[in-house]
Structure formats: structure tokens, C-alpha cells
Amino acid sequence: MTHTPTIPDEDVAPAVANLETIVSLSKRRGFIFPSSEIYGGINAVWDYGPLGVELKNNVKRAWWRTMVQLRDDIVGLDAGILMAPQVWVTSGHVAEFSDPLVECLTDHRRFRVDELPGAEDLSPSELLDPTVVERLGLKCPVDGGPLSPPRRFNLMLKTFLGPVENDAAVAYLRPETAQGIYVNFRNVRETSRKKIPFGIAQIGKAFRNEISPGNFVFRMREFEQMEMQYFVRPETAAGHFEEWLARRRDWYEAWGVAGGRLRTREHRPDELAHYAKKAVDVEYRFPFGWKELEGVHNRGDWDLGRHQEASGQNLEYFDPATEEHFIPWIVETSAGADRATFTFLIDAYREEEVRGETRVSLALHPELAPYKVAVLPLLKKRPEIVELCQRLVADLRRDTMAVYDDTASIGKLYRRQDEIGTPWCVTVDVESLEDGAVTVRDRDSMTQERIPLEGVKVAILDRLAAARP
Ligand code: GAP
Image (tube, rainbow, N blue to C red; front, side, top):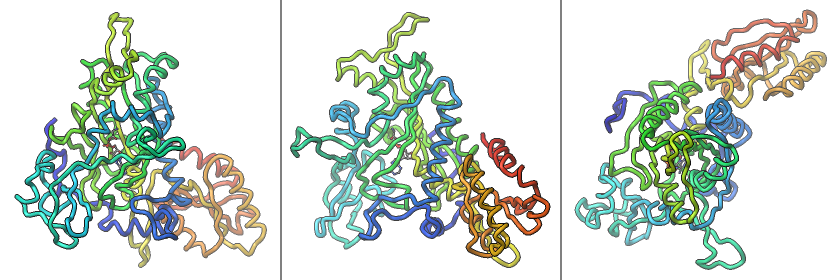
């Protein structure tokens, strides 16, 4: 693999030209809101509304299904956000997990060096060069004032445990979920009796004091990761790495993202995180450019080796076949639940002309859609129709997310469901009272078919099952 991305930058148009389209849909329909909005918000924290929490839960469920449920060699874990502070010293995060920053000497605002105009393409070592500000004539982008030389700014968020707020009580909010897996390696291996190669998967919150958060939920200070650590024999790590990279890229496509808007890009040696021997990002063509969606990393024996040394506990694996003791190497797949949710939302967005009007729809994979089915009465003034709808929706709800809506005309109700990605609408009309059949409308083709009322639930559940990768 070369360091050149698999698709050149300029070749692919984003699914949505303007990010604002997704931000406003999210707000209007209840996917994502600014956090603490009534107090003016808090930078880089976002809240998921009624539809957003369904979508994100479905994304996490899809990941868990692929990474844990369908695999014999991977088990799950849910470790604490707070960990022994020594974990972060050993892992290298206290010393290394930082961005180079400059400070404006007049208004004291701080900026990431790589986001200043003229410094975007510098290598990590150039970004920390003490002469870089002077050499490139960098200025404060807000008031044009002079800037300090760059210095490292640690991204971990700190808190205090216990009643005393001093250095001895400092704890960190984890900046990655991975360390919870490493410190539980022995517990999980012993209790699950898994043999190498095997993996441990985890979904959970992570926190980073990002200096320049932005682009909606792309870079947040509180976010969720979906990480899997695969423990392997050292000489097999390179092969497992390639297999996982291909699987993880394909996962997004299997759940609906257009393959042409996905690519892989290998990190240059000077870009690698402190723990990585090799790293390749799965990138997506966001409206603001090609950006990292997920990272696949070969972490070697960095983590288990360091934790063994610092804790004094034996973290080696004994291979009964070869009678060898060794520290397993780790191939990590590290995805963001928010970034994945954001990607599915952007990529599903469609606008088309239908009978002289713009139809907006979200062509989400049916399993990811917040509601799978909406039950709509053609005439809400007929109590028998409404009653039949209520019975149907109550039955559907026992097995899936279903919603009833009678607050507009049928055309408007369809458009509302299209816009939030509901794959099927079931309409009950006057004829239904006589022939016991209802109309099922498909979100993407807009075709309608008449099916017996008692067959609706099975038909919807069958279609969902058939669509699952
Ligand atoms: N354990 C390795 C690790 O954390 P990373 O590349 O720093 O690697 C992995 O992060 C993934 O976590 C990213 O690809 C992204 O999807 C997500 N992520 C990282 N920082 C984020 C942030 N500030 N906001 C939202 N998602 C983030």
C-alpha cells in the first residue's frame, strides 16, 4: 500500500453540497440539537433528539451485530470511563496526546497550527518547529495579531476523584475506549477462554478537549467510539491488518454508504500516533472534504507490553500449540459512532422533483431508519379507520419501531416520513374496512401494493430481515 489515497481528492462530489442542509434537517426533524441550547449552547457538544437517538442506536447495533454477534472470535466489554490515572501515563497519552497550538499575543485566543492559513500542509514535526510562525509569517486569523511559537496542548479532560481537589486526586475522562480493553485483556481471555487470534469489542463515550472542534458532529469534545482490538501472533499482524481494513471499509457500504464516496488513506510515518506501527484511515467524502471516518491501526505490542511493565502483571499469552509465551500484537479498528451516524445521514440524503415539487427523502438502510413503518389513516374522521390503525400500530410496536400520524393530509404525511427515512408507510382507507387489506408504500420507489392486514407485520419483518447484511 502506498500513502496516496485510493481516490484523488477532486474526483468525487459529496452527497450533499452544503452541510447546512443536514444541520437544518437535523434540527427541524429532531435528529440532533446543540447541547444546552437554552443557555446559548456549549461548544462541540451535541444532543441527539427522538429520531437521532434511534438512528445512532441502530448504527451501534449494526456495528455490534457485525463485530460481535456474527463472530465466534470476538467478545464484548463495557469498561468504565474513569480509569486508574496510571493507565494514561503508561499508554503514552499524558506525554504524547497533544496538538501543537499557538496563542495570539493580543487577545490570547489559541489555534491549532495546522488550521492556520498557510500551515495546512505542514508535517507534524514542522508544526512544532519553534521558528514556524516567524518563517511563514503566521498571524492571528481573528485580529491579525502576532502569535506565540507553537507548543503542545494535551487533549485529555481532567477531573478530580474524592473530596480533595489536588494533584493526587486527578483522574482523566478517557480519550479512547481502547485502554479499557487492554487492562481487561487477561480477565476477558481467562473467562472467555478464547484462543489467539481473538478480539474484544467495546462501544462507549470518549472525551477530548479539541481546540478547533467543528463541522457539526464531525469533531466533538464528548463523543462515542466503537472500537475492536484484535489480539494476534506478531508475525500475522500485517495480514490481519489488511483483512480488517477491507472488512471495515466494506461495512459502511453494506449498510448503505455509496462505495464511490469511501476511500482508504495510509498515514505517513511522521503522521502516526505514538502507539501505531501502521495506520490507514477509511475516509468519506464529507461536504467539507475527504476526512477520516475510521482508523485501522497496527499497535504492535506497544500497549500490552507497556502495561505489563508498568503494572508488574503478566499479560503474556501462552500458545499451547507451539508452547510459546509472548505478548500479542494488536490490530485495532477504531470507529466513531457519531461520525458514522453523521455519514449515514449525509449519504442517505436525496432531493428529487416529483410532480413539480421537491421531494426530500433519506434513503437509509431500513435497519438504520429511526422508524421502520408508519401507519396512516386516509380519513381521520372515520373512527373505525383510526381504530384499525391504532390496533395495527400497537401490534407492530411489539416487534419494531412503528409510528402513527394523522396530523395532516396523506400527501404531507408521506413527505414527512420520506424526510425522516421511514422505509414503509401503511395506509388504511375506507375499503380496508370492507376487504381487510391495506396499502403499503415503499419510500424509495414510491410504489404501492395492497396486502391483507394480517400479513402486514410479517411482510415488514421479512423485508427487514432480508435487507440485513
Ligand atoms: N483508539 C484509537 C483512536 O482513538 P482515533 O483516530 O484518534 O483513534 C478513532 O479515533 C475514531 O474516533 C475516529 O476515526 C473518529 O471516527 C472518532 N473520533 C475521534 N475524535 C473524535 C471527535 N473529536 N469527535 C467525534 N469523533 C471522533
